[in-house]
Length: 229
Ligand SMILES: Nc1nc2c(ncn2[C@@H]2O[C@H](COP(=O)(O)OP(=O)(O)O)[C@@H](O)[C@H]2O)c(=O)[nH]1
Ligand SMILES: [Mg+2]
Image 1 (cartoon, protein in one colour):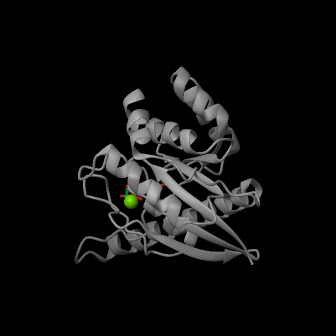
Image 2 (cartoon, rainbow, N blue to C red):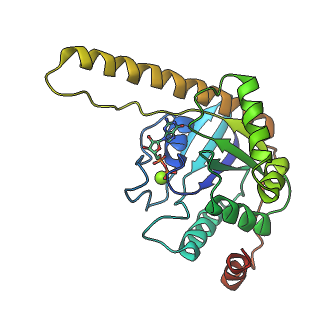
């Protein structure tokens, strides 16, 4: 069976772990809101789709309060190295704010791989099923500043919405309980739609050739890249 390795990166709290759950169809990646510490043990999970085995790797985000940028980038390198066959596609997750952290990760990845390997996944976008709204949003990204415009132009952008599916009801109020069940159900539907969109995107963009990081990639080079920003 063919296999594809997908690396998920981005700032803290932008929805990386949720995206990994949605893609792999599990709840094994730890979701959290960004005031709480997030993914410490970077995880990989696999699933089969249309005769292809996909392995999805979550990473810790830059901006994590417990780790320095250097530590985060070196943990991403570790992750890339653990996928020994190489990376098929990088999903750079942003929730629309396009933080300095996301730009740093992009520059870093550009330094270690070349070419069109990155898909920007715009999360928390409720109108993700509406093509016009997605296009409008891409236009808005192009207008933020030159640097972001350059990144957006070099990548494919895909919009999704993966809202929470474990919202808890107030206690002792049956009416509210019903509403919460309904919201969770609607949110699960949105996640399913996002998954369909992501899978058909991956099917298109993942080539047989995988990206490999230069074996001699050194830590001092990482530091240089960070300092450049
Ligand atoms: N509404 C909505 N909430 C999201 C989405 N993606 C993530 N979240 C929420 O954002 C928070 C951070 O998500 P998480 O995946 O843990 O972020 P990470 O730090 O990038 O791994 C959680 O509270 C999620 O429920 C999304 O697409 N839509
Ligand atoms: Mg996480």
